[in-house]
Image 1 (cartoon, one colour):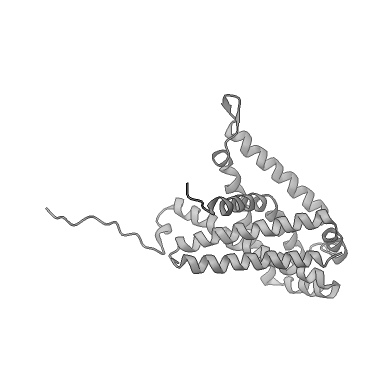
Image 2 (cartoon, rainbow over the protein chains, first blue to last red):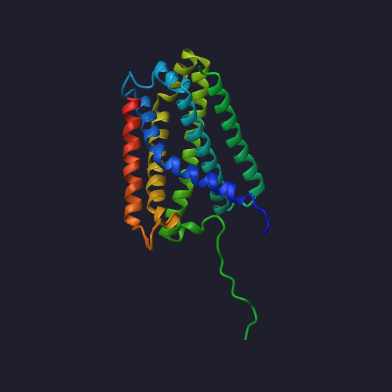
Length: 114
Length: 128
């Protein structure tokens, strides 16, 4: 059987869709609270910094951001094709590069937080 | 008799307006745009966090405003739509077999909703 990179892309997509389904709504809700100044004690620099400084926190943040980014990039690629953007190679390249840059940025941000 | 084949015209850019079913499909697909944009916002926030308290405060200040609130509201709707539609098809996406019998779909969906509720509650308590 011919080798294909589809299982890897599909696997990342499914894992990302699942993790996003579990955590993104509540993360958006917290961000909304912060944007509305709902609770001044929330989103403090110290508490988030402490979470990101712990190795388990780093792992959780990296996993959520990376998988969500790949899920969104892959799905938005398909969505653009569906609305008539047929330059799939260009779209895929741009979206996957954005996802990769986000992953790299997250990696180095986490590395510099201790 | 005409030998012309019948070709059904399908508009490339507006086909999904034809049926509510197609609209829901596009809605699910487009939710990925807002989830992607929000995740990129998290990437920026994390970078600001790494740069120090002042940088992080200016990130929060930029978020605070009608545009930030509007973006969060739209993204919240998109994320909720993604979560419910994703969990509702889990029995088809990953059927679980126990012995001879398939585990009922309602149990698989219910388990996902239960985990979702617990995870959301934990994050809310940690976040607030």
